Image 1 (cartoon, rainbow, N blue to C red):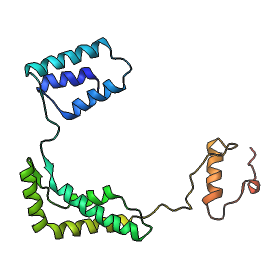
Image 2: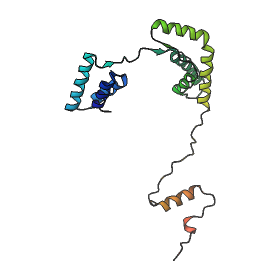
Image 3: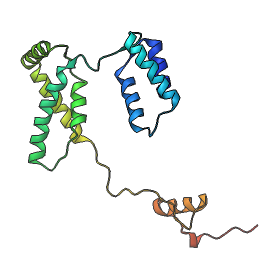
Amino acid sequence: MSIEKIVDQALQDGYLTPAMEAEVGRICDTAAELSIEEYMALDRLMGALLTGEVVAVPRKQFINVMEELVLTEAIARVAEIEATSDCTLDLGDIAAYALNRLPPLYATTEEGASYQRTRAKAELQVIITQKVSEGISRNLDQPEFFPERQVIRKEEKKDDVLGQISSLLQTYAHKYEGEDEVQPVEN
């Protein structure tokens, strides 16, 4: 999305989201030089922010304490498994699996987060451990791609479709008659 469109959207909605702000920052960071239109749009946005016509939404005013608890449990379990075996686990997949099966515990203050942590450790730690274990099991059970698999490639001398089909048949078809055995049909 362009700076002009982001500014128009912010003026229309009355607020600038963190995603919109990040996109403007990304454009400004990666552009060698901004156009006059982009500078004018940024000027309009700054004016609107200063007058209160547009409000910048704070980045994050809350946290999900469950994310912290699940990650702590998953990191400990994954480290334990990887230290005692040659398995490599995907921490993100395991945490996402568990989090999708657990209730969120949001807090807006440190006091609220502390309360949620204490409550979760007392009431939900067994379930957290169980869901992380399930996530690990699922991650371990994922099939690995077969090493004998090969990419189907074009052979340089067989660029036409018929040549490609012939190559595929030679490689994969059971009891395929080779090219040298096929007699051309004369008309």
